[in-house]
Image 1 (cartoon, one colour):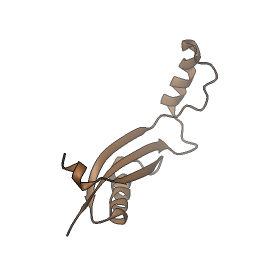
Image 2 (cartoon, helix red, strand yellow):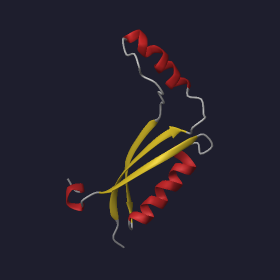
Image 3 (cartoon, one colour):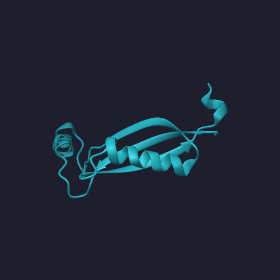
Image 4 (tube, helix red, strand yellow):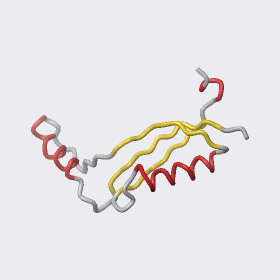
Length: 93
């Protein structure tokens, strides 16, 4: 079976309504640093990696499962997944 290589970016953010103490701390600090008018600060995380899979649908399903089981807390976090097929020639370096 031939596998395709995909570059994956997972953006994890707290769900709406979940308190974000890091975001609140940053937002309170900004005016003291001269950054007035910044509102709605939310802190998340970005996870990047590559995955080999038979096709984009299979890669999406695998990354969805990975997010649900390991990369996020599905009770309080959402994940936005971006998959990009990597050209085989450029992947070999």
